[in-house]
Image 1 (cartoon, one colour):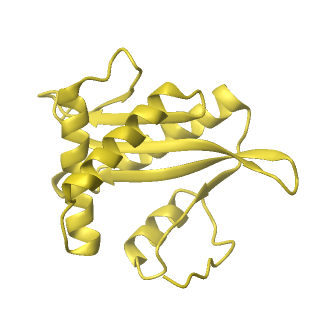
Image 2: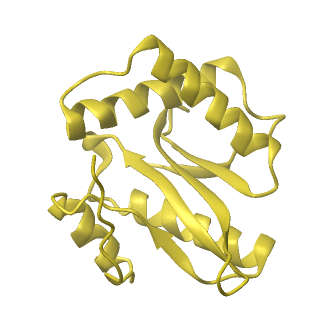
Length: 156
């Protein structure tokens, strides 16, 4: 099975790709929150994807199978730590369809995002937010070399 990882650009993004990413995002929501995206959520996500493509501080990578279907994606952005005046990379989303898991596709997406942080923004510091109850995600992120650093508390 041949999997291709590709950085999306303004020129390579089209409605079909946007809709495929939306469908994967919806699958992720169904898995993690047991609901589906509303129309307003879908519009907001498409807008967010457009912002990633328009900005030098955002990246979208997709994983495609031999039939050119998108089977996974990764989103990342560059953030600035104001207190220390340093920049860092934040992995905002990673998702791979269940049928393609355990094949190191998510790891390949992470590697591409980390390379993008290093090459485009000269930073090797990477952060990711993970739900405390998502043991599989915690295990994955620790497996790719990230360590638990902070607990974020919320009233939500």
